[in-house]
Structures are given as structure tokens and as C-alpha cells.
Length: 424
Image (cartoon, rainbow, N blue to C red; front, top):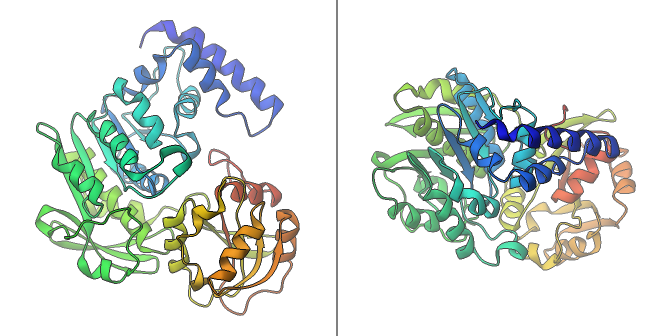
């Protein structure tokens, strides 16, 4: 690694210190902006320097959970892995994450880097990267203010995939990605994974993809998800069935686990031990707000993060039966309330409080879907205080469904970590 990056690294660390003095716990992107401006080659040079290469995980949804599962599987095999938290998946955030660990030479100790990468920023910087493995999760209707349509997302993922030097791991149930995989040419390999017809039939609304492939993957062509029951799933690898414990309920989390298994095998090659990988994946906790269960103010609360219409639908459909105390909070990150209209929220049945800066909008959507809404309270802090002060539910646990902005505000109000890099 050229020593010419040492001044940039020092300035980035000064910027990080000043940003944290100004706003404790925040300013994580500032040092990355500084370094990327004065040393634009630092990011790619560092990421391309790991002895066993770079693995990129990207797609519309499931990146954070898949990345965490994959890192656990690789570490269970003895690999030293550098990774980033999901809040650092754009270029300046990635650079800031690197600065936390890089020496003045720019090098980071570790065998391999596994990075969650935003599809838009990943496409922008991919021309300078040399990932050994690229993992593609799915294409969903997501962030339409940024990406306009799913074809645009598929094109960005294709650009990232074309940089792979070893293997592209493809979700064969996503038609956009299935088509992309067909255009990957040797010597780059394609590793496919998918669900069985029975699993898809058990999810009549589908799995959230913009386009679902018309046929299912054969067992001889890749790994399969064969069953899901709450937080338990079964997968088929080379004809053998393995049980996987999931960090949260739902088929979408089971698909994340399958993605991580396929990615681990693509990364490890002959040293891949499926039993070891399954054990590691089964032991990870929920990823920051995604089915996370916390104890706060003496009561147990489950956090359910929704980031797009598809994840909203999948999480509503996967809610634990008998959940009787629900708060839904949608914040300023949902600029146009109609963005969430495609989700059928009728399965919630009864919501105690609709809150967040878009409280009236989400409350209206819920009521149009036939959901009983007891109260609309735009003041999220007040809504949380009153929700948590309620007597314990007779069944289930208190459940808060929120968008990303409301998640951050909820955690801050409750005194919980507001950044995935913070200790919980």
C-alpha cells in the first residue's frame, strides 16, 4: 500500500475526532468525505489489498443480515474477516469504516474483506474494485426517489457483478438476477440458490421481488430453501438437509441465510464445511432493528424495521400470531406516503398507535386497509412513552414497526444504540 495515503489517513482521523466532539456518536461519514476528496484512490487500493480478496454483498434488501451471516460463517472456518456495519455501505461510509482499522500504510489486518454495499454507490466505485466474489440478493421496488425503476437497479447490480474475478452468487428466484446470471461468462463462475415450489406456495404474495422467475431451481443446480416455520428453516445442500435457526421470523430471513451459505461456499471453496457454516449462522442475533427483541423500561419489545413496500409486506405477513400491542411509526425517510401503499397492512388487524412525522398518512393507510387504529400521535416520544407504559400484553410482546428514520428516533428516545457500530 503506497505510503502516500498516510497524510490523508491522518487528516481523516482528525476529522473523525472533531466530528465526534461536535456530535457524540455521529459524524461517521465526515472522515470518509475528507479522505475521498484528498486521496480518491485510497478506498479501492485498500479494499483490493486483502490476501484472500474482497466479497461484495449487494441488492435491494437483505444485505445487512446476509453480510452478518456470511461473516459469521467465514469466521467459524478460521478466517480473519474485515467487515462494515450496514450504516457504512456508501463510499464515504466505507472509507470511514476503513479508517477505524487501517494503519498509516493503509493496510488492514485480515484475510478477507466482506462488505455490504449500496447498489448505487457500489456501481459508481465498482470500476476500481476487483472483488473475488459478488453476492446479489434481490431486486425490489425500493428508493424510487433515487433509482426510479427496477431495471435501473438491475443494471447497477450487473455493473458490480461484471467486476467479479471468481464467482457471482445469484438468487435464481429473482428474474432480474436470473437473467443477469445467464450473461456471466467463464472463467467467472455462477453459484445459484433458490426456494422450492412448496416454500413459494406458502408465500402467496411472493417474496417481494419485482419479477419472480417462473420456474424453481433444481436441487442439482444450487442450494435450496426447503422449509420455513417461524424462526426455523431447512435447507438442502448437495442433497443433504440441514436445520437453520433464524434471527427473526419469516421466509425473507430464511432466504438471507441461504444466500449466506451459498456465498460462504463460493468464498471458501473446498474448505467449506456446511455443518460449521449452519451452526455459525444459527447463532447470530437479529441485525439492528430487524426482528430485534430488547428489554426497555422493564418490558420486552420487538423492533420490526420496514424499508420498502416489499419488506413492509413481508414483515406484516410474518408477524407473530396473537400480537396484540402494536405501534407503527413512519418518519421523514418516507418522503411520499404513497410509497408504502402497495403493502396490504390488513393482517395487522389492530394498531394501538400510529406515530412519526407521517403518523396521519400511515394511520390513513391502515384504516383504508381495515385496520383498527386507536390513536394517531405524531409526537413519537410521547407515543413511545404511552405505549411502553401500557400493561403487559396477554399474548405476544409489545411490537414496534418503524421506518428507518423512526427507528433512529425510537432508539435515541429509549437510550439505545443509534448506530450499528455502537455497543448495544
